[in-house]
Length: 84
Image 1 (cartoon, rainbow, N blue to C red):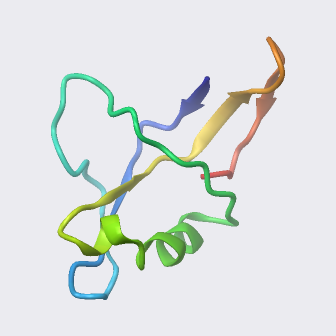
Image 2 (cartoon, rainbow, N blue to C red):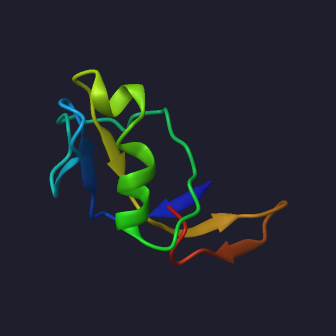
């Protein structure tokens, strides 16, 4: 389990050029299940890393939410202030 920030950066690169917004891609009353963890220095680095992926380019989007804390081996919680 992990705790993520409420703030979101959504990345689209439909024409090959990354475009970001501060809104979710789709409105949903339940959380989406698919996710990846990307270690990066900042959100700008994550945008560069995900802009070329099929999801960002094929009329989809990738929502980036920085991780605040993540469980590590049992009940230990490890603070992860910048991992995305």
